[in-house]
Image (tube, rainbow, N blue to C red):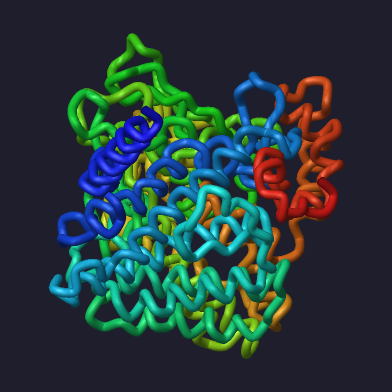
Length: 615
């Protein structure tokens, strides 16, 4: 009997082993990496996944909650009264965790793509090279965003081999920058020229070169301070400038740069790289951004385009511009939109500005009235986000050139090109040479000759005489002084029952736009001018805080801002966020704020991480 049971047991065991050998142990509910990345379509789908994290980060977090913590803007909304934007947070703040996670998700996607790029060697090698270049660059760009924000971070360059592979120590900031530059340099030789692509929404050779210039400038500054990188920054910027095939040039109109973006027009001469958005969430195209919404001019009018408008300019930002610089009145709105019941795009213009009222103006770069996707969405915009403009390349070249060789003629000319593009070409002054007599009403003012157009002005009378001329408000240029004048126009006064009034005009010239002599007297003076010029040209494009930090002036500048706001407004009447800032958070900004804290959750999960100083 026992023998029978033994035979039965052996038979069952043999049968079981036979079944096990016939079973396929390979899971069928998902693909292994070795089974994917085998066609060009699959490679591009995977690459789109790497791009996707750009859309997430620039949609709202960067352009509202933590992209404006420098000295250009302040936060209007009164709830919640804490957060990154007023420097009231801990390492546990969810925005840090979200930022960190999104970037490492993008890095992880790039790692899988790069590790499996050659799964099918039969695929076209040129197509694989392009995918590799874009993935390498995007991974490096995500690391650039991390190292700017947190300093040294774990440098993960391959997919994990185990779910238990979670402890990764921080590389030094220098090691991270070295890898960023190595990967971007390799990518530069692999990606397509921008003219071949025909649009700026994909990584291209010009974008890689421009971002490499930016990376090198940051590596030359705090915290690495490798000043040898100024030469590299200068050379990468020069490659963009000297690329005859791409033919990069400034858009003749400063406002035109942003009108193109809002109205979904590519301008690859000026805009080298953009984050793509499209749609109004009423169809399959649902990835919208926030340009013109959270950082636009407030409006409840859905035809104009609803704008939450959580940010306003500081007086320091407004007065950083000179009279004649038309970038000011495009970047800082001169009007408010009408109510929801008024016609679309109705504007109410501000009549005056001083150190108090300057704080009450919204950013004006991205104006929803120019959107072409209809109907307009109330929770996002289809406007692409610019990440690299040719004007930035010129300013980076000038800065790096100055650090290498002082204010050379080439450095000065690069800055002047940017300034001239943003300068008024209309009437500068009107001088009444004779008030005339007998005027009972304001006469009509006419400007003729001079080669320009677009002036709109009215005469001011007092005691029967003409005493001055007032230019009408203009939504683009601030006031309607005209554009394109090459010589002073003649002025005539007609009507108003009087006679004899006369006046002469002067016009703005390129000499007015050029850097003042004192700013070109030496390396220090030029550096200081560039620090302000970058803000004038790039205000609201989220570079300011990072620039202040790399220049080593962030803490002192924010303390000065706090004192200036209190002097301008006082604490008793200051809006809530500004009041909090000047009462404590501004003065308490210290060296620790040059880096964000490592998120608490990451410290818990990754035992090899260490916290930044002061946190």
